[in-house]
Amino acid sequence: MEPILCDASSAPLARVVIVHGALDRAMAFRRVLQRLHEYDVTVYDRRGYGAAVGLTPATSIDDHVADLIAVLDERPTVVIGHSMGGSIAMLAAASRPDLVQALGVFEPPLPGVTLPTDDAPTSASIPEDDEHLVRWMYRRVVGKSAFAGMNARAQRTLVGEAPALRTDVESVRDEAKPFDPTAVSVPTVIGYGADSAPRHKARAEWLAEEIPNSTLFEAPGAQHGCHRSHPELFAKFVIQAASLAATD
Image 1 (tube, rainbow, N blue to C red):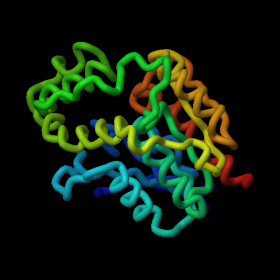
Image 2: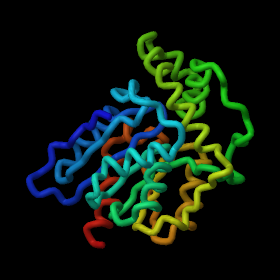
Image 3: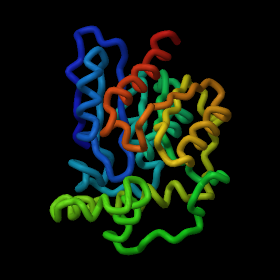
Image 4: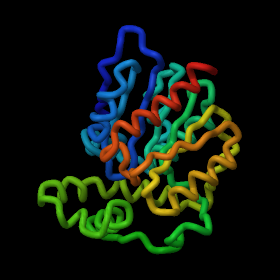
C-alpha cells in the first residue's frame, strides 16, 4: 500500500486516514487533501487497487479492515471512508473504537443489508468476466457510457483491478455477515450527495437512525463521486467529522 500524505501544519488539528472505495485509489483524493493542510492526513491504496494492485489479494472485507487497523498503527485517528471504504471504516470502528476517535462515511454500501429503496436485488448475479464486471460497476455507479469513454490504457488498468472489485462486491452481498450499525459507538458523520441516486440518501438516513451518535451531511449538487467532482465539499465533510474528535 502506497500512502499519500498531506503536507500538514506543524501542529495538526487531528490525524485523519481516508479509505477509498471500489475501483478507486488514493490519488483521487489529491484535491481534497489540498484543502486539509491543517490536518495530518493519510490516504492509501487498498489491496488490489492502484499502486497496491500487485499485493496479495484480499479474500474478504475482513482483510481490508485488518489493513486499515494496521495503517492506524495504534494511534487514535479520525477515519473517513468513501463508498466501500465507508463500510470498511465502520467495521474498523466497531472492532477498535479505542483507535477511531470519530468517523465519516460517505454513501457506504451496507454489507448483508437490503433496504426497500435498493434498486437491485442482492440475488442478482455478479458478472463472471472481469471486463463485464468493471463495465457493470461503472454503469451502476458512474453512468452508462463512462467506461466506454475511457482510453484503452485506462480501461486495461481498471480491468486489472477486477479481482479486488469482485471481493468488494461479494463482501457487500454476504448475507451471512450482516452489518450491525448499532455496533458503531464513536461519533459519526454520514454523508451523501444531494444529486445521488435515491438509494444513497435512503441508506444514509437509515444509518443515521441506527448509529447511536451520528449526524447527516448533505453535499449540494454532488453525486457519489463527490471527492472528485466537489473536493471542497468533501473536505468540509472531513472537517465536520474531525471536529467531533476535537470536542470529544
